[in-house]
Image (cartoon, rainbow, N blue to C red; front, side, top):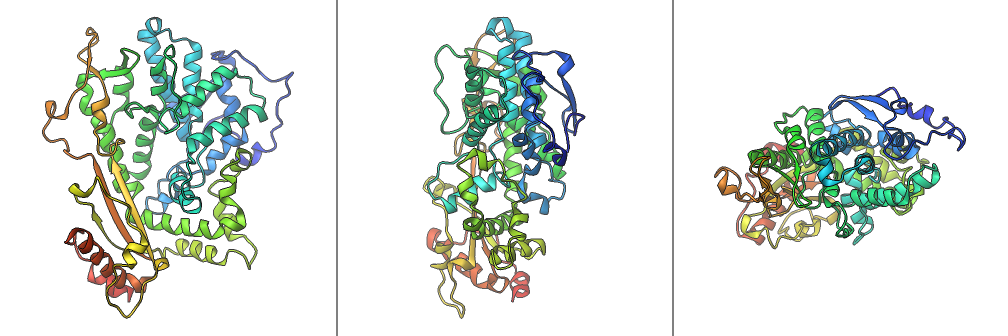
Length: 481
């Protein structure tokens, strides 16, 4: 992907530079002798500065080559084989463009210096180094089942891993700068640090925006995922990076870009509906999680999640570790992996959308809920026969509209910022900002009919009617028997 990037095989053989020979440019240096160019298929040429290169050339960062951005989605969308590696480079590039734009037009007013620019770019580069195998599946599907109640997050692991990288590879960076980078990485997480009054708060909204959700992380993955999956993308991120303006320590946008911002959130929601939570994608993920749980005790997967020294060695190749385990080990996990390879997936039975008036008090449906709704059948269902996927799709703020927390301005000659409500722009925009979808799967094809019936009974018991769009197709029931 670029001239500087060694192959993963060659990387291990590279000697670490000695303190005497290592290049140690000043923080934020733009010495072109040490800048490398990388060509990205989304953003074009990306310039990596010397300090960024020190991080990129570590084995911990190179690990991102073996973490697919969308996990196992490529089994449904064959083009979705891009990795966290190129996404991280893309966010680094966009973070640089955003802060450079602000410096060009407001640098003197805001006091933006080369330290701020370097820090924001590094936060973009390193924001995802803490992702586990198969990206969000590890964090949101696997760990909650093996460690219920865990508060583990990839943002927190990124911070721990960053400290480990700096110490292990003797990267020359001031502690204050490092702390700021870590705070920027966790800015949108539940554990975000409260900033002091004298800090430039707007800098923390560029990479991971906890204030309103508009950040360069989304700019990159929305464009990259749409392209990889062959989907159209009408969202134009450059309009926002060129139009952003800091007012009252907050990034604001031209009022004319209201619909462009809405397109950002709606495109993200469309990706969740059609790609990330595609029924077949979720079937594969449910199976892989079952395999990882079966292999957890033997491989100690969840134990590695708490130690950065062990964690960075986990990546998507863990499937190979399962398949190559000794013959008498991990038999069930191996069987599940082989079923995935043969496309013998858990059978999708049906789904329903939670009624709008029930969204506020909705609780996730479990396999036990479905099994307990079985009335009469020759086959008695067990919890291990059923898999349930509870899908949440929103505009980043649950039932709330994220645009209500965004400030706009009339034009660049105006110093007043203000919010805009949907009804002032269009009556065609959605009145609800959240969807909850419940899908049920039969782990064995011969149980599709029985599981489908129990699922319909569950809907009748909860809502007094079947809320699914249609009955499970007869062909599917017949084919499964």
